[in-house]
Structures are given as structure tokens and as C-alpha cells.
Length: 91
Image 1 (cartoon, rainbow, N blue to C red):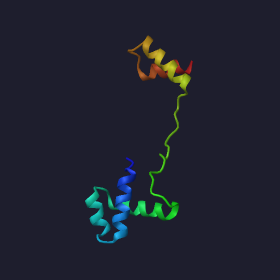
Image 2: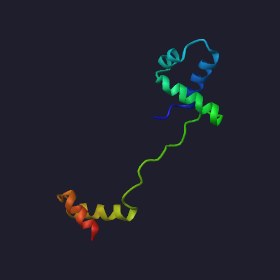
Image 3: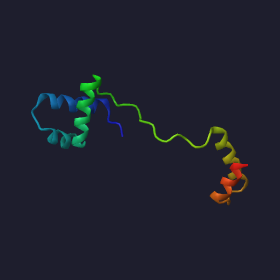
Image 4: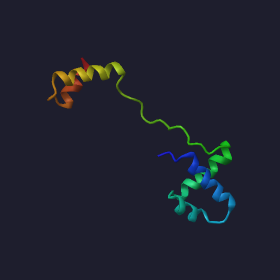
């Protein structure tokens, strides 16, 4: 979950004021203490505190055409097993 820019700014401002420990700030704002360290490192290294883009993940195994084919196969045989659908997709 990406925390809002406003929350990030309030956390950094609180840390910079130095009136509370990072643990107290984390509890106050309902975030994990490690998030504060990551946020401060990001500010130091990148110069901003905006949420970073999603890191990605595994790429899709099926193309858009494959998905459309699968939709048609399921519509034709809604009781087909996964194995049967896989066999049909290989044709």
C-alpha cells in the first residue's frame, strides 16, 4: 500500500523536528518504524518523498489474444477442467 504524500510529509516533518523518537512517530502515524527509515533514505538519495512506482512482478503468461481465446473456451465448455482448458489452449 502506498501511503499518501501528505502522511509522508507529516512523518518527515515530525522526524526533522526531533521532538519524538522514530518509534513514537511510527506509533503516532500508524506505520512501521522501518517505513520511516525507508522514507528518510528515499529523501536523502532521491531528494523526494513521493511514492515510488510499483516494482512490477511476474509478467503475464497469456497474451491478450490468449485471454480472449480462453474466454471463448470457457464460454463453450464452462464445466471444463483446468487441464482440459490447457490442452485446448495448446491447439
